[in-house]
Length: 152
Image (cartoon, rainbow, N blue to C red; front, side, top):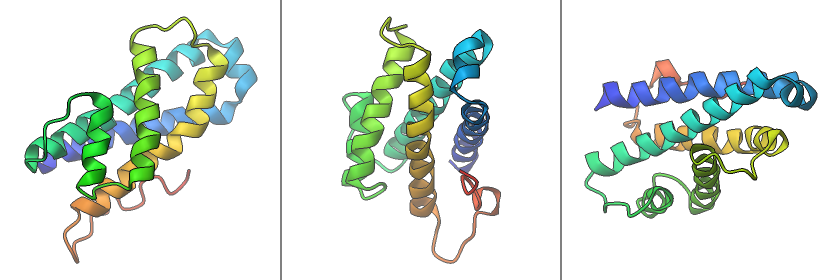
């Protein structure tokens, strides 16, 4: 289990770091540079997908109720006290953005993607922190991810 969990965290963290760089480059560059825009779409989709995969892994590994949808994953994690309910609601909105990205929703544009990166990245990082705290046995440090997200 731990290898898979570490893999998901590593992938989410790499994507988040790159998304942060895109965000720091500013809106003008994001809008004008097609490569930045497409990279942002891909990385955001992958980061959200990593949260979904991590959530599903926790649910199946711990025998929690089976989710009926991607949105439902975060309701289940909240009901099991893995994450707070308020964060679950925010993550369900993030999943909606992922669905729009996957389905190439024509309403998505550079501004909406940039705003999602700017505002929803914090929710992804919060998800990671809550999951790490939930998974960490008392008195055991997870050095590999201990400072994860601290620079955001």
